[in-house]
Image (tube, rainbow, N blue to C red; front, side):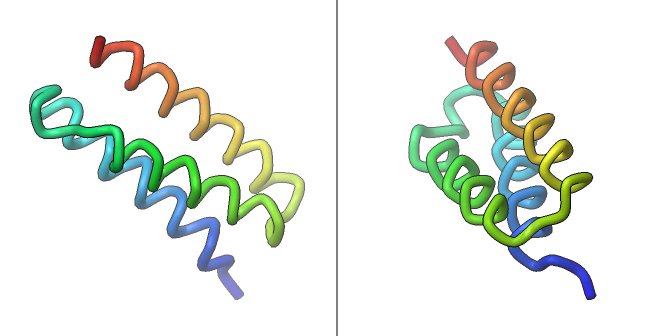
Length: 69
């Protein structure tokens, strides 16, 4: 069974990244916070492998956020 919280986190980061690449004006703080919250929620119910992927998603989110500035 797939971990829905994990999948939600991946989708939230993907949405944030896509909006960010379309132009910083399309991305806002609320989108980033939603992605971070989805990642944190997923940590509670994921495997070790998924935790490593979540860490990568956090790094990706931080990098995209830095590119916005």
